[in-house]
Image 1 (cartoon, rainbow over the protein chains, first blue to last red):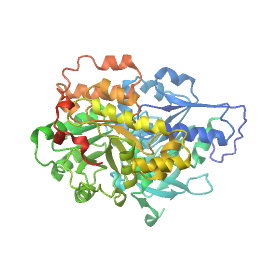
Image 2: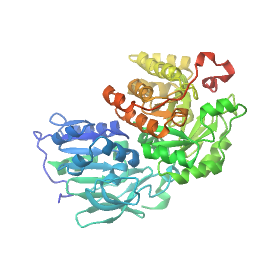
Image 3: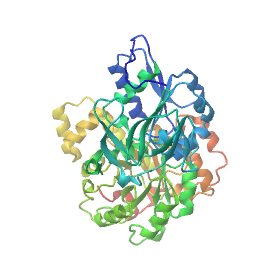
Image 4: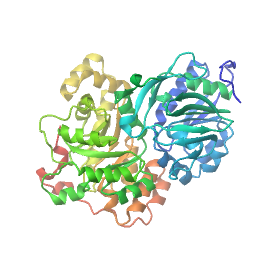
Length: 207
Length: 298
């Protein structure tokens, strides 16, 4: 299990190689956010953040980001591009937001999405309803001293978790921030703001 | 978290929703069966209509918002976002679609305009809007009114990509031509474009439109879709091109894959094999002025 305290030390000689799954969704925002976070941590020079489009690129990566988008579309394209098995057996960390969180789950309420089963949790897609129920709120995240301003856009929630999962954020409707080993799943969109604390914590857990 | 501290319908949420559609294909559908085909093919959203644009052209008369019953039928059939079209300036049709709970409203030139002077004041709505544009000035005016997404207009219902290409080249070229202008020159240029200077300055700084920009109006094949992506579109709308082709399921899947692999000609070649007939299409030069949809709204 990783720690949540953020006490691990970063050496400037340690870099990480991050691939943002670029099948559909807000890919460029994730690349930008990770680059900003790495710059803030003094790791920009030694690290690499790029798009991930082909299964043969996965082996060289320390981490993968699965962005928000439409989970039915991304799920279909993962299978079509022969990325399902390499992703499901990936040994690095995965940073998954919104649709990405749905894909990480062991269980989902919808047969239209083939999840990767990498985190022991059941998720509900579009748990709040349609776009008009999308909202912004300040939420508490375990390990962060100040609240995180979160955008929930047709967001999922996790309703049940297994023992390997740590819930780090919850709202009335369910669990919205979760970690399992090096993986982090978020129902909201930290890549759409300029607060990179969660990206930084994910990177710290990798090294 | 207290309920009164939640904020709904903000600019950030509207633009965020649009951002989630990037790299995707949004398909026109007229019933639940077509919506399911679109979703299974990998569409990121569907546009719920009573008729696709090619059939609106044929039908003539005044084209209005679809029957709410039709829209609800489609909303109930899929899990992906559902969009609906309203007439340019028809803010009550927009209120109706917002009340139905559609995920995005297209204020569209494909329908007969309700107001020849004003577009809808989109900042007054909590639902995000997409609007058509033929050039940078038009795009920025729509964004200033509150559009969370722009789509180049092209010429809907023709199956002819030539106008989509023209409008994408216009917008991209105009943005490239702005690079290096100082703040005084930007204000001057904004006056020519009839667009707010602050939005133009933001566009110059970003080197792109400040909201997601899709391509629409005439895309009929996987190659058409990939070409628009290579020209800088963030995603594509396909209207009549899918359900007016001889094998809609196959065409829908092929266009989704072509958009996903828009820079890989070998993949586009593979998915383009044996698709049957694309929609027949129209030569836009043979249209009478009153048949050209892109002239609606400015």
